[in-house]
Image (cartoon, rainbow, N blue to C red; front, side):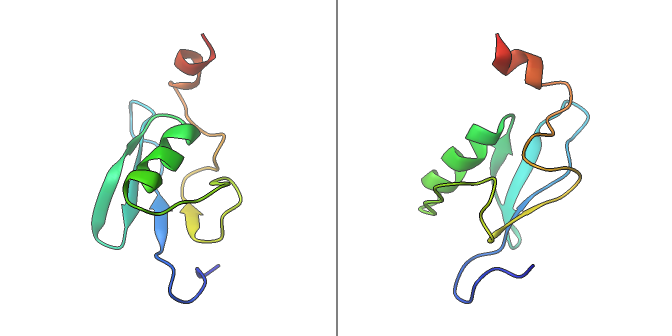
Length: 78
């Protein structure tokens, strides 16, 4: 689904070998996330305030959804 007019298109890319996921807006890398909470913080630092990153229309999740962090989830559960 395309983001609403005037909104950036944010992509959370498929997990890397270490489980982290790159977050981009167009050709710009905004950061690398290791948890869904990191995505929200990366967007906040880019002045993109998203209250629910898991349901936001402007975010495209590739290679899995907001719950897919292979190899990293056990680090955030401790």
